[in-house]
Length: 231
Image (cartoon, rainbow, N blue to C red; front, side, top):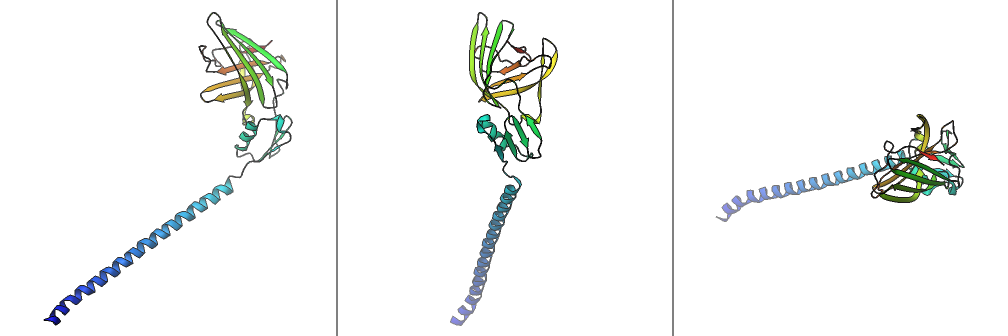
């Protein structure tokens, strides 16, 4: 009887051993697969990082005199890729390929200028003083006769990418177009753009204002308010 039981029990033991070995083998295969996947993923991330580092070289900006420019402008230049390194010398921006771009020469640095214009009972007075090659200090007075007044001031700067293309505006009084430089001050949802230039026929400064956040006075844009003229 014992022999019969032993004979019957042996196949089950054999099958149990096979099952355990199979489970062990599958577990090892799964663990090895996870290790390979993890290793492969790490290698891919490493390769992508090395490629990104190699292809995105930091832009270098060499500055002769930092007081001639704002820190914001210099930081902005460092973010412009595709042109190589930059050099800032006096009123010149020099690209790596030796192309040279001149900063605007008007208005003159440290000279205060007043520009005015009026339309539909709204008068705007713009006072500006250029403090370096890229920045102006401004005061804007708006007066809507019999209704509201609004005053704002701040510092506006040329965009670091100004050399990519020129702006142009038209003087409504003469119908003549002229090149202009845009100075901007953007703070959250409020913005002020001051565009300055001159016509070849006159040395007097012309200006355009694009501005919102004017309290009770409407938003000013290129279409709804005329050219401001130097007094």
